[in-house]
Image 1 (tube, rainbow, N blue to C red):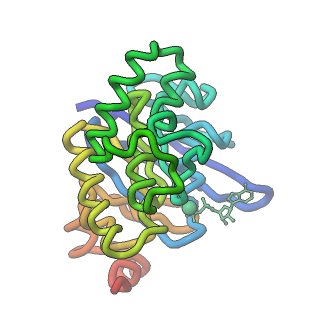
Image 2 (cartoon, rainbow, N blue to C red):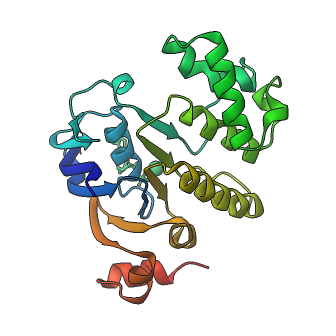
Length: 239
Ligand code: ADP
Ligand code: MG
């Protein structure tokens, strides 16, 4: 199968600091790949480059066999969920989910049908007319997920979507995200600094350090055969 998302030699500098240093990454269609690494290693910057929110200083990004390196964010067909739920507080849940569809000129009836499907997918149909602040953190993240899927993205980018949640909700939601991702066959890049989370949800894990991917492996491979001392220590340090 072809690579669905392909990054080649991606570089990003902030002033003198090289935050992404020649990153190569390939994700096949329907795969969930995790970027795992300590805070500051460049995970969010890499996602922002893929979404087009940050310009590259070198390299290229292909999505579904199309070069999107110079495309503006709105043309990239990418869905993104952030750590802190960036729902619009002044819009209802339904309006939040429909927002991107409205922007793309979809008819009201089609917006409604699609948002009902998506709210059912995340099991929150009954919350359609309430405002985000009346929801729990976990529910808000499920709405954020539904909203990111509304425009039928080619790739889903999840930037530590569980980090702000309590342990129990975090565990339930990671399983739920994985189930939804599999059911939709959604090509997904998932970012976390949590080793256990990475090992549990992923088809493949890429360990990042200082702007580079230092091991790209199956969860089992990472755990049983870390290639460097850093990876061994990092994988061994979770509790
Ligand atoms: P992570 O998501 O892995 O924690 P980030 O991608 O957010 O890491 O950041 C990687 C590095 O880039 C950090 O050292 C951070 O301080 C720096 N950085 C991120 N965004 C900017 C920016 N807009 N301007 C300057 N430095 C930045
Ligand atoms: Mg980050």
